[in-house]
Amino acid sequence: MEHTARPSRLAEPLFVRALDIEKKALGPLHPDVASSLNSLARLYQAQGTYPKAEPLLSRAADIRELQLRSSLGPLSESRKRASYWADPQQTQPDQVADRGGSRAVYFADPSGHWIEVLTR
Image (cartoon, rainbow, N blue to C red; front, side, top):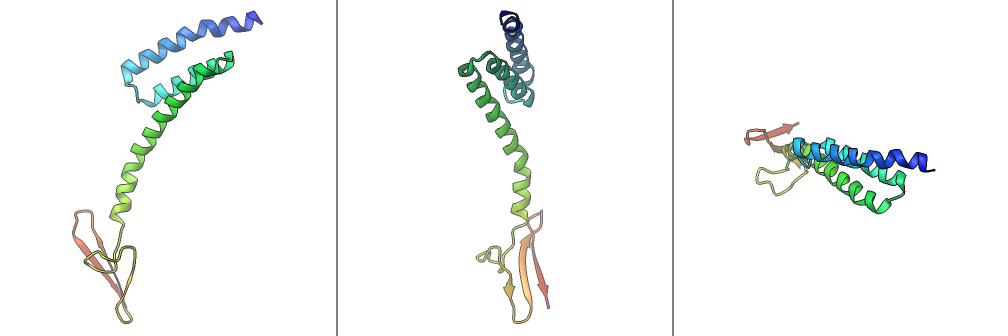
């Protein structure tokens, strides 16, 4: 058993050093830092030192969540532009106006100008 435990003890300082280098070179919120946190946590899990692994996994999850939120930002901006109203005063969101046989919707183009679409 000592034979298999020894390499993981030798690996720990290398994982910690690599993590420190990545934090300094790439910044603490970089995806590679999250991957290194996961790798070090897996080493701790293999050693059975779960209390050391848990905060690393939590920090890696936080970094990945921040990345996801930042990548979803442009998507939510696009959704805002895709909003439409049944009236030009914007009091009836996500509705289509019935104009006695015609239908109408209003939406803003990317430059902020209002567009009216009518059907017969």
